[in-house]
Length: 391
Image (cartoon, rainbow, N blue to C red):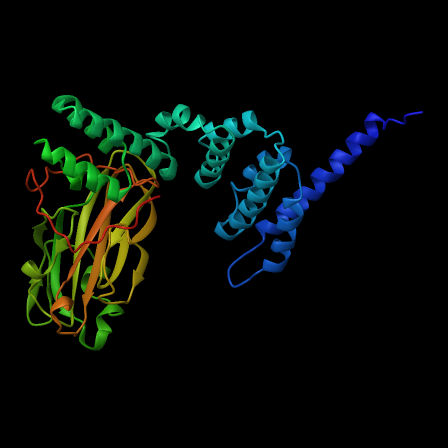
């Protein structure tokens, strides 16, 4: 006689397994820096990795609140399950993972993983899904979608369909957030005679008021509280390093928004300068200030200190520092302190910064009163390093 388990027994087993999974996921979520709970997380990941493919949607969901370290443990478990299931030609929960991928409320890293799994299971899914990711909040999914747009534009250019190619490249540029892709697309557009306003595309602030120089002898200026940190009275004059100083207008037409303080404040060493800009936001909500600077710096936003780095000449690149802020609708005030040290080598003369306002995907947030770019074709500058490609 064949003995069949009761429905109650089956439900108890399923419930017990899910509760166990919840405990392992909770253990992984506790992992932290400096090896905090690493051993427990590793053991938990090993247990989860022995689960079946039907558990993949739960593990992907668990990546939503996970920190980077926890996400790595969860991904390890997911990869093991996927490899084992595909090797055994087992069933994968394709529809559930597809629904997870298309829900933009899920974390971008988890959605990207779901996409990679779907493409492994059904390679034709890439051609179907990618066109819909051109404006996706996941910068990695967006990257691949933009690659498709670039390829389509290249085909039109090779066929000498100039007008169609220009429109296709412009569509790709509008969607692009990866700096290397933007560089490539910009070159193609300019080769077709199209003017590209990169400072506007990125959202770099190009018009500032600056004051200085103040002292930075023996690097003491970084911690010294000079008048602009106490009050932002743009009509006031103060005692500077070698005389009275006042606020002055400065602007840039550099390709990636680099603001050079040397022409306005003097090509000096062991000095401190300040720059401020009023940003009129069209919306209220979370945003990022993204800064590139090879000098010592501090940033204040709406009179609140955000962050600073007392380092010098370690190189600058786009989006080198990402500073989360909350925009107010209307006027927001940005104050930047930039310190120059006493090194006298040629490459240490640079006293400059670049700053843009954007959302978490790198999409520019443009001020309601943003002035036109200083020139239609910004000055090229090759020493500003773009970050590595998003792929």
